[in-house]
Length: 304
Image 1 (cartoon, one colour):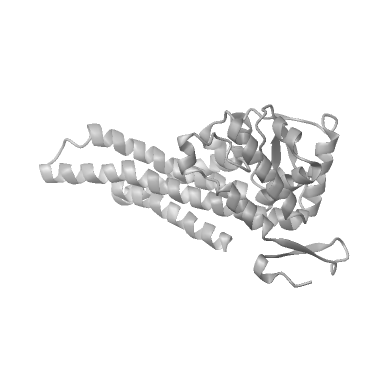
Image 2: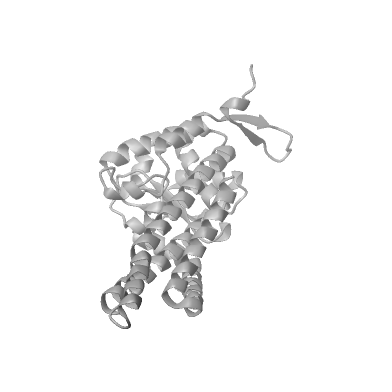
């Protein structure tokens, strides 16, 4: 369901971009918007991981630097049937983590120094399972595309603002009035609509990563406890991070007092915790290679 919802919302977001192009320049505007979006997506596809790591000031760590973390990440990568990702660290007391990279073969996970201080090994394993789920579900690529299209709409909206100020003085009064109304719709309504859609897609992907991560590590309670601890500490120790990168993290790194929380790309943490604790992992040993797991919600739990 989350995958279908994401696909539908992505199509709506793309439609908004084309509509903005059409309102600005008709068929020519649509073509320009398409070329603009393709160029931005090409750059984001190849360089999104470098941009994200640079924005968060993350630095690489080796197995010799932190063998315990390396072993834990390697274990979760194996459970998710994915290659070992690169491991980065962010020097901050705020507990958080994120994944980036265009594919499982080009993935990176990053953790803050603060997360290592407050989580147990099982809880950190749940967090890493969540991040590997993002990579396996191609969420890192999906959200890069979403952010790029939303960014393209915002840039076109900015151009519309300039046009409304300086370019709406020609032609008849009727034409001038119509142009200004169209430009104001593009400048104000379209970016807001794009933001709402971006939030919806990001929230759907977070719920999906929670489910997939719990399935892979086999311990939804550990991930629930980790989210609970991180939310509590990050409220008093928010990260100083560019808002454009906030959607990458497992929980919103911005302060709870920030206006940005009104437009959070993350679902409510308490709802995520509730859903995780409504799950029950039942081992399934039909596979000879390794046990798989079946997730049962509260309504499907067997009576013992």
